[in-house]
Length: 166
Image: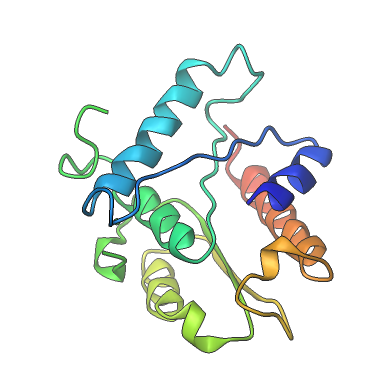
């Protein structure tokens, strides 16, 4: 995610890449705990890094996208946020945050987003699906796909923050 984080930083966003344990190291939902722990750390240190703690966005690609979605849809659920997501549209509820899906042109790498987008629509939660034409699985790493990916993220954030200011 480094290339995308750098591109977003150039546009004025504070970015942080976080590590999480893979299933070979720790079983599900350890990766979700790890990302939620990172978010808590960012909120705790928000002043030091000039972060608006009300505008923290979780993003990920491939398996990281699944984890980002699960982090977003499991807020307030004790089993996923112990002190401190199996990707399933069944977790989507009226408290799920606005969600952006950026999908490659390889359908098997974008499974599940249609079901989740439909459930978001049911709850009237803002969401958007942006396909990146002629893109491989790892499109977010390279141009010509990096710029459209960063543009989609920036446009979505401008839209949701204009409609839902902190």
